Amino acid sequence: HSFPTRRSSDLLFVIGMITGLSNNLMAQTTATVSNNASCTIIAPIGITAGQDLKFGDIIKGAGNVTVATNGDRTITTAMKSGTQLGTIQAAAFTVSGEEGYNYAITLPANDVVTLTKTDATAMAVNSFVSSPNATSTITSGTNTILVGATLTVASDQLAGDYTGTFNVTVAYN
Image (cartoon, rainbow, N blue to C red):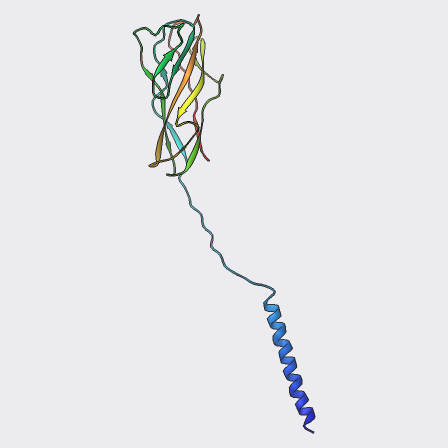
């Protein structure tokens, strides 16, 4: 009666195969893999004021005085420049940050900035322009932005010194 013994060994073989197959099937239902994570910390963007925007000396009369980003001044024909020009210059700012990164430049909107005298007499400063214009890329860790604008002078503008402030904002793109 060797038949039952043979059947027992066959049965054990079949049970072993089923067990091994089910372990293999379970191993294939999940998988795990590792991946890397990284980041780069960059220098924050910053801006500092340099030279002021100066429209120079203006002879009383209605019109506009514009200082370009290269420091050139133009006046409307109704006004006279005279020989006493005073100091004329575009404003300058230094932008610092991570070399190679792009940034946007935001200048004041029209009808926001005024130059005022101690008695509160005011003149509007509008049409701000910059060089570079609107966007740039930080090179060598710093960049220079030059800013010009147009000053509107009324025909009855009182004589005296006028001052004001304006903001220039930079932000990474």
